[in-house]
Length: 362
Image (cartoon, rainbow, N blue to C red; front, side):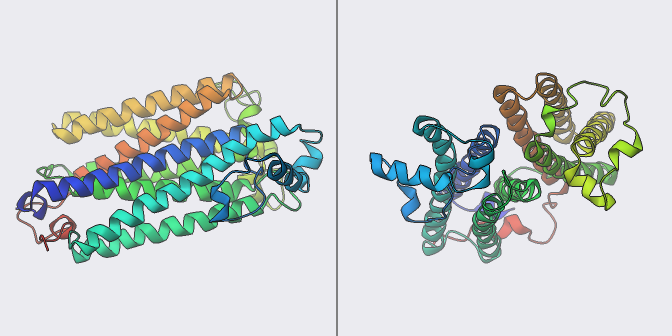
């Protein structure tokens, strides 16, 4: 019997509610971050003030000071010259909300975590894992400022590579929490062929890579060009001299608009095809809950692909773009759940991470 089944349901439920809330806040922050990027608001706050930056500049004078700081960066001089205070406030609120959410998530994670530790509600194995997630959260904040700093001196926007790293790290934190939640549930393991486990893991890894590539597309605004489908730059496969004209060649992977968008498309096709094969294999194998999970994952990926195509054809309207990003989070969630479902330890096996997830009442 797992520890989750043996211990008091109220204690397990409290930990699950806490982690579910944190996961939901992270998903919300990812979407607000997407809106911040789409509205070009990310450089409206040019100073990093972890404590005092929590309060917005409400009186008129502080607003003027904040706007004056924005005028000193290249983005304002080259793209936003002449912006009114009202226009500045519009982009400011997106970035301020994004940063505030980051602070709220840190508090929502750390304070309950410390309380559960004090009450002896978390076993030793999960103490290390949950402290690790908190450390990743702190690193994520530092990476966020590292990203913003890339657009304050010479560039008119933040580095698309740093943006992609920032987003991917947030999604890794989110996936880690989803995995933890799953391991705290008391469900019987799924018996399935090894090949289903391998393809499920491959789908999860490819999903994270695809989300990274999508962030590169967003960072370069590469979705606003080559707005045709299934062709791109006049064909199904662009000419090699157009894909690899940058030198050295590897710069094309993150600087060439055509190459970045083409890579994102090709990964989408590969991901969709593997998800279809995984679902068919799971159904034929009569893998029970794993078959259901595979079908849901394939369905979410199909919807994600459709939204991606529509977003491209309509030149990235904010509604479709955020919908595309939201379904991306759903796809990641389902991919994590599918891997955990297929790799969960057997009941008769040695104690697993689930067996030490929640400590005995102190």
